[in-house]
Image 1 (cartoon, rainbow, N blue to C red):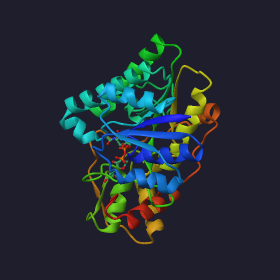
Image 2 (cartoon, rainbow, N blue to C red):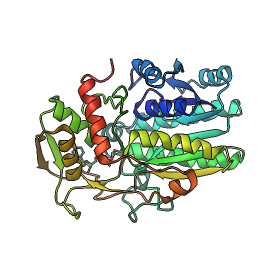
Image 3 (tube, rainbow, N blue to C red):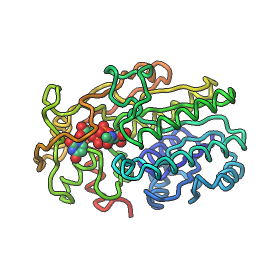
Image 4 (cartoon, rainbow, N blue to C red):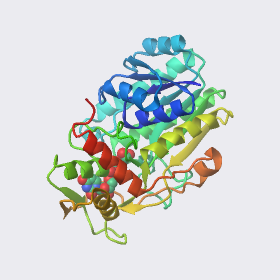
Length: 337
Ligand code: UD1
């Protein structure tokens, strides 16, 4: 199939492009390069050994996106594009509501105009807010995110549900990611955060390479075995494969489907730090700090639904994540050129 990837030069989009190309799909990327670099396009082509189409465009520009869909004869879309910094969303909620919502609506209009009826949406486990039970399954309440970024995901999910109800021919997959981490094993693709990383693994790699002084562990007095928070870290390559599997599912006309994409295994912050120290073979400069507001003690998925219905499961471990993230950081200390 020929697949449109919005935000396809971003972290998860670029890895998904490579996995789609490996399965002989064709890839068309639309990205405004707000938080990514053009050189990612060449890296995708280098790693996959295949050519892709790239358009630098704003998703809000429905006319342009619609024309790209028509010219390229796009058959399905994966919607990665969006702002994703929790702190920024708290400081500037209007920016998040405006951008994440208008781009999603505009994309849907362009798809609609072109009779494209397969859409995969990058949602997040953040829609579960404070988990009502763990492990989290897709039936858990998903209406209470802790910040505006998370609420944009809830609202977009709601919009897509309404859209699908109004147009039963549409097939939509809502993918709720747990904690994506790691990099492509080639070290040619990886996470390239702008400014101070929000997430644990890129922060670890930046401390280890000397870009940041010290890791602060956000609290060790939670009710977990070692007192630090537990998350479900999923290797970005496994996550990328989950998208390919979701597209296959959409071909069977399931209507709207929702899947948690995680490993089903929780790791504490301390366990991740230890795995990372083993991967780098050096101790990391770290200290215990206070809790981070909004953090939940523990969250991980029940991966059964995705395993049963997508015939997909995460294969890579926290060791793989740490090894690949570190290799990426070492070989690309400045990120992408
Ligand atoms: C964060 C986002 C979430 C997003 C997800 C995946 C918040 C509140 N939530 O989730 O919306 O979907 O990333 O991108 O930001 N930690 C440290 N020190 C650090 C950094 C992190 O101890 O310097 C700890 C955190 O407190 C947390 C764990 O590491 O316990 C994981 O943090 P992070 O990578 O930010 O992911 P989440 O908080 O799960």
